[in-house]
Amino acid sequence: MQLGYHRKPVGLVNAGGYYDHLLAFLDHAAAAGFVRASHRPLMLSAPDIVALLEMMAVVEIPHFSLGHAPPRL
Image (cartoon, rainbow, N blue to C red; front, top):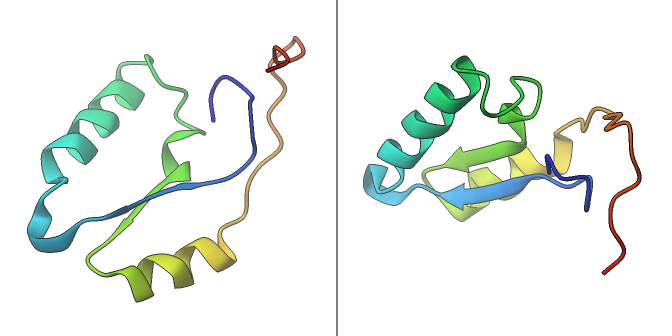
């Protein structure tokens, strides 16, 4: 996401709140400026796969200008 390799969301099935601490860390990282706040919504989470896939089907990915071309892999 932030490195510019792709323009796709990342999804976590947060069953039983398993990833709650990771998501809180990402929120903190965005608030602290370590992760661009505009990139944080690209990490989607839902309690089940059906809800997550529905979210991923409609998420709007903003166009990010990184100021450089991403490296070729």
